[in-house]
Amino acid sequence: MLLRRDRAFIAITVMLDVAFHASRTRAASAADIATRLGLARRGMEPLLQILSRRGLLESVRGPRGGYRLGRVPRSLRLDEIVAAVVSDDEEPGLEHPTGAVLTEVVLPLWAEIERAATAELAAMTLDDLLKRAAAAGITRPEEEPVDFVI
Image 1 (cartoon, rainbow, N blue to C red):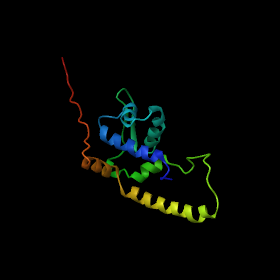
Image 2: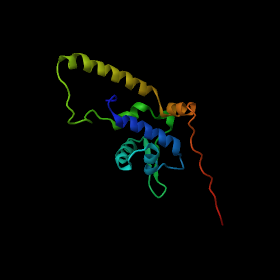
Image 3: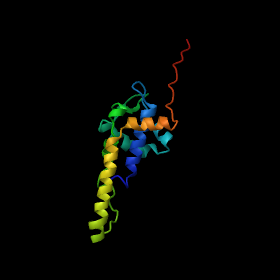
Image 4: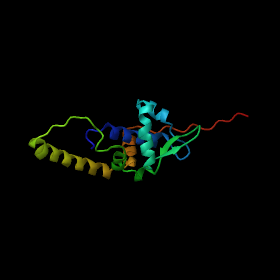
């Protein structure tokens, strides 16, 4: 599941980007998210839709639309973000080896590693990543004040 999945990596990064750049009153546009992360918007849209359907993101329509977190960061566990975007049949057509070494040694090892990784992800939330970002000196952008001229 996890160890060979770029979608999990991207989904966690997208969620963290939205946590940084969106608020209850301001959404992060898909175009802005894609630009900040250096990803193609077209390829990211299905991922955003999946996260939105699962309730992890909230989709906001309209001229100032985009995405914001579906719940508070402390309640968004990393394992549920990964589970939303990763499926076991994600790599069709990939040739897999066969034999006793695979079934008796490698697959059980891989399952053990997967369980450990999943347990770590279940113990962490998006809020934990925000704290790590703050510890690394990464700050959230300030909202620009509204400026009126009459």
